[in-house]
Amino acid sequence: MLLIKKALALSWMLALSLTAIIVPSYWLSTEVDRQRSLLESGYHLIVTKSYHGYWPGSVVIGMGLLLATIGLVIYQYKPKLYPIILKASTYICIVGIGALLAGPFTASLYWSQVALARGYTQCDDYPLLGRDRVHMNIWSKDPATCDDSRVARMLSSTSDEDLLRVHRLIESEQGVKFKDLGFK
Image (cartoon, rainbow, N blue to C red):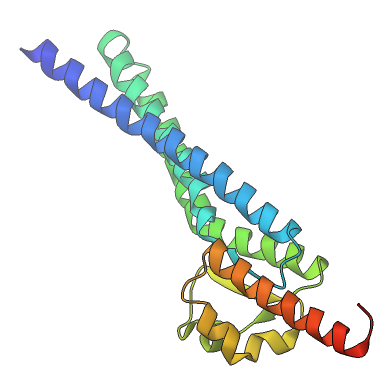
């Protein structure tokens, strides 16, 4: 019975630690790809999100949990190694917590620099969304778009579909302006 309990505990810890590594890694890669493609899209209005900055810290914590789980197995066979593994897994988890706290700030700083380099200006979230967002920044190629009430009505959320609708609106307005001036 004791062996079954140990096997179940080991299985549970392995599943938990591997989930803490695999799931955040997947979310991080998909969100970074989405952010990059949005910045390269040339949309007039984009939204950068930094909540994915939590995922690297989660992965490091998952690795610390995995090492602790391996340490529990090793404890049964070589008890003298357990304190070393426990200390190492504790340090890894502490580094993971630090990365968890610093990640969103780092992600926000990185995406802000990329957006500025691509010619975007940061907008205030409140006029466009009716609320401030913690892990989100709205960027526009034209600062006048930041205060446009029609754009604010179109942005019910910050989904890619809403951003595409805003982009199409601005493109159609610019097309009309160019047509009126005789450039098209």
